[in-house]
Image (cartoon, rainbow, N blue to C red):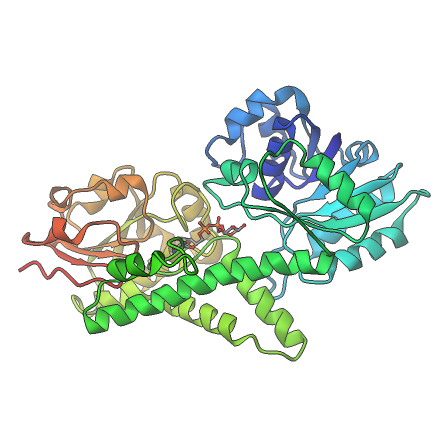
Length: 442
Ligand code: UDX
């Protein structure tokens, strides 16, 4: 099949490359010329394991272009994988999706199925179909189908090629057949066929359920600290029950990323638009907002303020395996440390450059000047008065107690439960994590 993909972010590019890997001819379209040139030279614009290798392997079936006219004219199927960022009021911004829909309507020359992969509010697929039909320039038949994406960053290729399910939301047999053909090469993956609105809802309900699971376990962890239970023992005991499952029960300083924060707010907004309050999701959002500041609050136990202190921050990205910083706890904490008077030294294997840019964008150069970007963990910890861990990168998890010896005072506040408690006990280390007992260094 001839497939065009609009948008070369995580969803668009990974879908395109995996579709090419299963034998289709894929044209990846983006408005960003620089990005297109980078991909033409065989490089991926995003840090994602295995992506560049698959781009090289399937090079003959992949085209990267800004020429959307040609791409849409020749496509049997067009996937829309552009962003739907959060608006100030929490609703989803659909302007990128509608721009692409318009370009499609103005340029298609043959019947085709337009597949919306972007996460969009329930009812959007219906509206897009009507919009495209009203904007068509040629007498062709266009159907819109919903096909939400469930990949997680860092495991995007595996999640696409070995997805837990493929959800197809269609209103007619023709669209179903075309989508089944597109996914023909994706073996042993259950296909869920439903109507468009249910497909759209499956995406939000799934993401929000996972966010809820994390906020729930974070609250249980907070209570564990107060009553002397251990969250890891607790989740281990819970996980044997198949109805609960043993995944996504890692307590920490809250979820970040491009999906959970945005999709919880979007569903909450959508519910209130229908005069309904979705209380569980509202609570998940509130808990997550609070959780981000948990380590900062813990630091007050050791220092009344961070004024004049050297603070080491290990890990900046919202999770390991990605250079993405969207909604990362580091983004709200580092400015807080600086405002509190600290000199902040940060380390991340891939996220420092993006962090620096985000700080410049969202704050000011003056604030950024108080942040020292280190190349090595050792350099970050040197002479530090306190250390905060925000991301569980393997390099950070591999640290041993002796690696913290060059700190002025060894106080470690770990937001991702990176270490076994036994490893730190009996040493001159104060170690606090989430939902577990503290090691007081005595
Ligand atoms: C998520 C969904 O997993 C994916 O299915 C969807 O398509 C997009 O959103 P992603 O945001 O890439 O993917 O990462 P994920 O691994 O789900 O982690 C999201 C956040 O939750 C991270 O900040 C992570 O640290 C946090 N998290 C995850 C926890 O705090 N505890 C957990 O047990 C799991």
